[in-house]
Image (tube, rainbow, N blue to C red; front, side):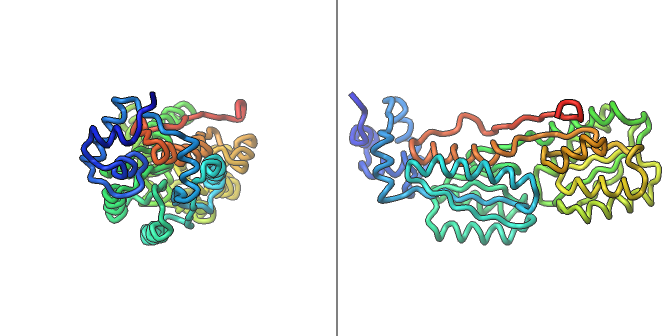
Length: 341
């Protein structure tokens, strides 16, 4: 016989409505009460009636908010496709995905978007957050208010978000250090290029890369990282300026967008054949430059999964109370060169 909400309510010493709110995140319930209810439901093997739940949602539709960053970049266009595919999947059960996106990575804009989504009545939030104390506090306040949060593409430390979906950025940076060591002179000089100061993933890619170079390949020298804001023209200017100051540059590691600017700068200054390049994202322009030997290695990170999975995790949690099994869902660190892309 199927376990009912009434049975769970009697064992938990609460009302049936409180059980419903706790299991389906439909309202505020004290954390300790919600935890007790979910524990009892799990012990009893409670399984929600998905058809009935979907029918009930026609009157009270679930709303999942999504905030993406730097959506002007080709990589984020690929990630957006994953978001839209997930939105179509959950729409069959009456759930609505409301997307907000911004150019660049502005903390104030993201906080404003959260306010807009709250006004829309969202039940959960997927966000690629700016790494900022105000954002950290806001995420924790959302969780305290009963709104689960999943981060994607970029994470943020010291929050109570449910989980993160994206690449292990520090390990990806270390991977790139090993690749670069294999294709540069023993006493090479490397320029690391990051994107935004408040992008957690970019910062970890730089940290992993520079740490691995220092630990494992100490004869390679790294210049101080510069910030390109995912902008091709700025990336080109930074590269050309570095080449003027350091004509002995042997490699560039770009941990962000704007990769085409590096390739243009090297071509304009005649350094294409002498400066090695490693960067991220399997986007069309990068692939062309890889095939034309302007880029030596591309690191893929599965943009579609980073857009698709956070929404499905939130939907499963809001729809059936299923909590994610892991705190980190890491996408692949795929290594491509001109021969296997």
